[in-house]
Image 1 (cartoon, one colour):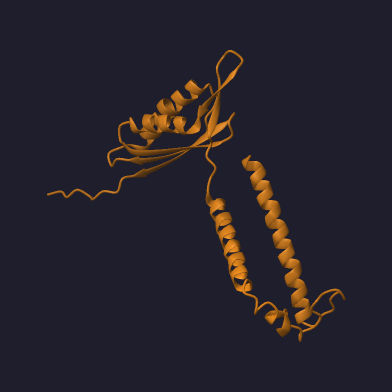
Image 2 (cartoon, rainbow, N blue to C red):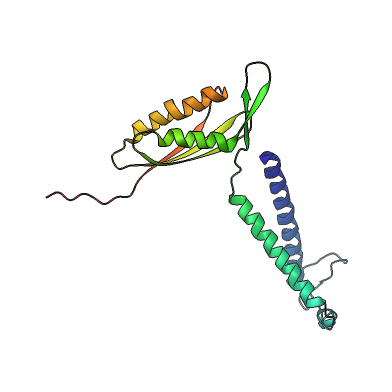
Length: 195
């Protein structure tokens, strides 16, 4: 589903960009006095986008300004929604589990994330853990962020995460592999004074 949305997003962006490029180029050509097609509404540098009569045509109508403001507000809201959607990463809602009898079971993605977080927090030296499942139902991927205590060894924390938490998740979900991106940070703390 996310691949389809990405393709649609790219196609829409390409079409909007192409349209803006063509219209902007034609307006620039007309403004510079270059030749433009006969059907183009602006043919020279002296032309204006909207004449005085066109600008004042609907001015006396009571519905005109509220409609313009509502339309512009809707355009702004849709643009902000689209912008926020670009930064949001899709989380996996469910994971397919091979039950061993030829049938497939489904595990909720949030439940698997919660178990992985609990297993990661159970490790010595981990102050906080956040897990997000991505990918698709048959081949999930994980993003793990661990906040380590000052005394914790990053290598040991990573090995324990790989062996215990992710190993248990792979085994329980019947997955051959569970690719993971792990980010480790240390808790900010003050340096101890030595007397």
